[in-house]
Length: 405
Image (cartoon, rainbow, N blue to C red):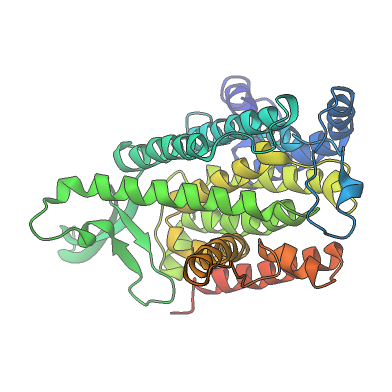
């Protein structure tokens, strides 16, 4: 909103300093600063309100050291992230930008799914929370919205170089021009000619106009997987929020480079018009998560609950899809992936061995993976720090793919 106000003041009244809102870097800096302040200053008030409403976490005794001491810690702290993310975005981003609208919808959508889950756990005293099938329905609904928007919206395009010939006063010379086109291309890491079009996945007998069905199905899978991965990662103090900061910074870099013509040409990556506004959202996202870490780092004064964790995963998935970097998700979101896969492996192996041998066996001492290390005697602060280090390494590898082909 402030962008439009100061643009008007600059154009109509030549208001001193109003033109600074045209700069992406200024608005991103303002967004991350404001989100940090909101989370740090008002986070305490939100925590006190949650405690007054007796919205405390019900802890199941899993035999983990220090676990039962966390009983009664306020949950639904995801509202701290939600408030400190949405408000700066509304102030500093262009609200007519399709990517910003999509990200705000994703934030509120999965935030509400998570809130319903937490509400059932806390107030209905049902430890299982919202049934899994209803969570999946909500995630599939968001995937439909995201997939259909990215495929059909007229403002979701890529800018390509079209070589051609034009006549000048000197004669005919070689010349090229940039043109915005609709394309379902994405980026394949580590390949020299790294553009991949989803249409090529269709069998020859299926017309290209049905590509949207395949694309939407892939988007639904990505949104659901990343959202659940973040949800599972949120098991010890600061792990999900800190990992999300690293991922958010990485995707913010991708969004900035994808909207910068010189950088996109130099790096030979897709130029995505209007994607620069996502830098504002990424800045607010990073600031909100860091501000939340002020209270969520060990020992946590508040848990984000599903209100926060489902929201973080969906935001990251939509950012990756919008920047055409969804095939990098296994790398940049490697922590989420490993945590999710560890649960799938544990459950699958247990069921298989129980069916075959009459007794269920386990691969890990406990899943998700961070609980395995807790069972081995590692302090949770050490586990979180080491997971962050791995996340940083994966982020660096993801950025290196820009040139390593």
